[in-house]
Length: 158
Image 1: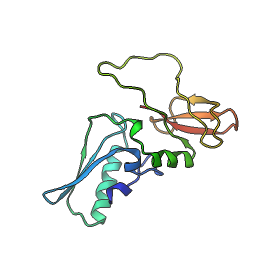
Image 2: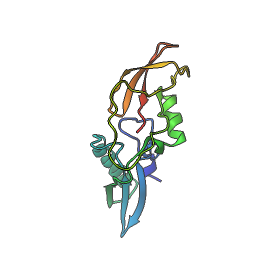
Image 3: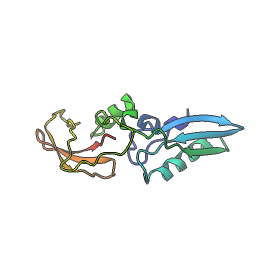
């Protein structure tokens, strides 16, 4: 399927399907309707994802394309496919662990240092330290491996 081949603009080693943001593709009255979910509220990549999907489907011969944003349920890093997790690690980015369990109601405020952990995607060591809670994009943190000394990005669990 054409929509499944479109890559994420911020993580180009992953397709939107690998990332889990591609929710549904169907045809309604001659129009290809694609539903995508942002990784987080205000994600700046949504416009590029939408344009890339429209362009790919037009090139494949589908003249009418409608890309819709679906907000519920909210996206979770648990939606990243196993193939997507392998692709992240192969490109030197630590895939996320399991997302925290979501409960209805307000999100509790957690003060203090991050408690995230991630194994080094280069040497596999679990002995890593977070250098910055924010990496090149808001959904990634910057970590360093104490074993091999290499820095790497980690997709944060949400």
